[in-house]
Length: 298
Image (cartoon, rainbow, N blue to C red):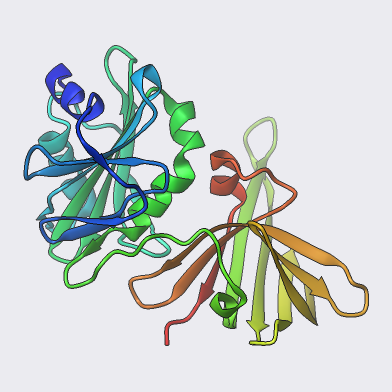
């Protein structure tokens, strides 16, 4: 990245407006993450948001949409050349799959002098490709801020759709309906000589149906190395400051989660991100252990 461009993106010290609001750039709208400062644009091609100051500053810059060819990796390389300029595009470039927003591609690298960590998302929004550039002091800072960064990226919308501010607190009314979650992981094993020695797979799926009176029913299934476990239950939902809990009938056991975010997806579904309370709600923990609960659109 050229020193001039880096200065124009990182060292922004202009009039800041209130955070946690929806802003627009041409036909693109986005919600400023809570606690971040939105900088009044000095050019028509990008808008920026900052957190912190000096060497501890993080910046999100969103750019006017470019033409999308339909090849996310090729569009990423073209976008990098246009918005990052002097630095070569990183390798490899990865596919980006969104739960609530536009999918596309992403890649990251350090500046030549290791002074900044640069991450670019390229979001494929129909015929448009939207570059979102994130600049932090290092990779650890990016990881710490990954949750609000991810929420921002997931919330970007192209007209006629309009971005909405991300909810981080919810009420019982927000939870009414049928929610689904699940995940899987697979590990392959090799011998010291490199020969294949088998594999293991763990997968799970759960469905919660939450009623207006706070009661719930749930069904779940899991598989571990070809052994399947199924079950069902019922109980009541408990909401606290930043938490949601599910108290089972009879035993009274409670499963509690940190409420991370609540967003409306492109297809009208609702995406609720939760993190079990056995983990601290850090950026790294949310990225690795956060659960996406999906409620279908109406």
